[in-house]
Length: 271
Image 1 (cartoon, rainbow, N blue to C red):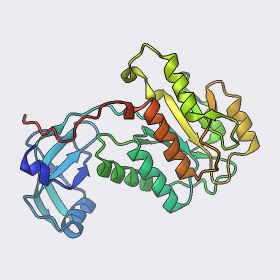
Image 2 (cartoon, helix red, strand yellow):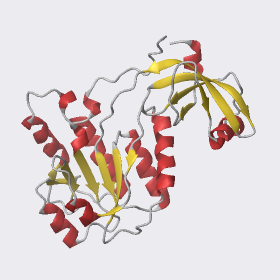
Image 3 (cartoon, rainbow, N blue to C red):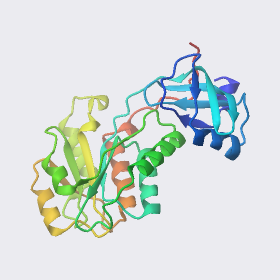
Image 4 (cartoon, rainbow, N blue to C red):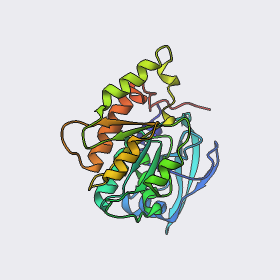
């Protein structure tokens, strides 16, 4: 790995296509952040990604008064497909929702689906704010992709419009489900003979209840679905954000990318 790549401590998401030798225009808030928060100067190396073209090394070419450009140097990491599960959750209070989003992105979630439930504390979701949180978390954890944020939907409407090949892990706070690790191990055993890489985790969804729990009607409706499997997250009642992290952790360990040898993040490669 080159000295410039080692010195590139900042990492930014950009929406533009990235090609060798091109220039990327920074958003005003990105320029402000680099110049006034991080105190960076022109000539400073930086890593960039857009979720499509891999991770690249670039250099700050211009930075002044909320305007900035980056000069793209070379590819550091090839783009990969990060096939994380969907996480469905009822919106919770601001700081805890921020934490849930950040950690779900770090855990490799593929899609975030806000759902409206009977006992949820709010049905208002600022998608622009969630999107900013998702990008910031993806920048920090060095993902090469940015999870999708689906529009909020009522729980029962979400269940009624279910894709045929998607499986739902219902995190049942009543404790009636089997341990989530046991359920996922059984799913994997059914696919014995298939490599872990061929397990299509895109076709799995995890649903977490609101702070007040699912209503009795909601629990009954979920349990009646042929595509849903109730799972337990242990003997204690967990906060929504804790439940999300716990469920995603076990999922990634049994069916997801924790079971794979990670690709090194230091593979600076000349073009």
